[in-house]
Image (tube, rainbow over all chains, first blue to last red; front, side, top):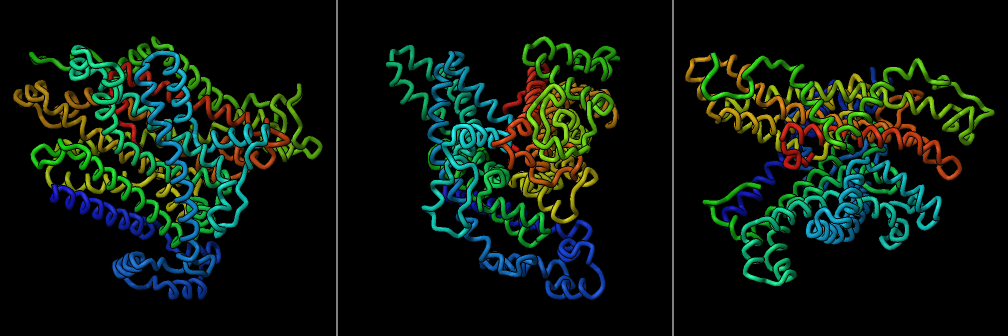
Length: 320
Length: 298
């Protein structure tokens, strides 16, 4: 058990190391460097030389990678080319805002989607299921920016219930966000719910068809007791990993949604940095979001390990 | 001479015959019909629209800014006085062009590498799969944005980039499919007959992973379309004044309260294409008996 945990944590760290390597190598391998990207057409002569010297671009790549990686570990993310400020002072309030958005969406979306998934699974092919499932497929298929735009059109323009865009400053105190943030939370929760709901539904249907549930039914266990004691614990276990995957996947969706709602989070900062061709900033944000993703998956795997005794012995271990 | 233990290659089957029977199978499902019709409609529209659009897509008229739908302009006009119907009809061209090429490349390179890794195995395989996992550990959009920040955008950049990233999950799936097929009896039989390696791959392996490749291709295509339209919504897809749904939706947001048609037309067009592709991919997977649910992530 202990060895399994250690191994899983090491695997997570290794993935993170590889990811940081990929993020760094991508920039190295492509034509150009941060200076040519930033200066654009003015990238020539003295200006380019100065810029390269400022960023130590003439030292070997490996040395730069190591100092970059060590700096990042210390929370020193370097200097933003465009804004001429330290990246961490810009990134950290934005990170807080993005985490707030993701957290709120998860707290609302996960319980609702699990509940709906169970309902759809238990009443399979009944009207409830058909409604829930087809709405979920629709929400999954349509790109986030389309569903977000439609919801803005309906709820803030036609009905006037919520503000359509966020106008709060990035470093405003948390409670000032709460009034603006409702619609983005709903969109995120909706997209997330669709994925989780489908998985929970499939899982419940599978377990309902299993031998031990048949057995429980035959020996006369009351229906709801059977559902709570036999079906749900087994059906919900595999969804832990999926919930982590979905939250992580949300990090990709959050980029688009933050732009739609003009929400001052990491995703919008990343898009702005891409427009400004501020590579150092883009690298750091990609790394932070990737780290969150890897951490979530790690936590989910550990949680499953604790919740499911079958995985605890070395002999039967199956890597999820 | 055919082996006693037969596989799917028995009989004169060529790839077009396979595709034809597959299409028939898809058309026998209601969802497949709807999906195929939507996709076919959009493809035909993308090819023919330059010839049949009522207006010039970049012609701006100051007198006609944000006019509501009328007999003259069926979907109204946008903030620069351009005809929304024209732009909506043309708006899928770039997306379809870029993503269809990228999807084919993605499945090809991912498939080839997947087969290679599945056959070779060993240390090389272990190492590469670690790298593949690291790539899969990050949402695609982060990589795409990193590359766009570096080298800019345009179809020259987007086709190889999308093809590269969407090919990576294909490696994993095709590798698993290869392992499945290689372990089966007809491959052992062919090997015992003394067939060469290239014959094994061509005659025994390829026909049996073709199903997986087709389903992968269809699914990657629909996801790429999502990515492309998201990118162009963020302003990194096509350059104005090219008509593109993502960009049109993005441009229309500021005027949505007074001119909702500028948003609704491209939204309807994009959604119908994506729903059509998804329904088709689903029907394809069901027809070929490839389990789609397993491959949901990424």
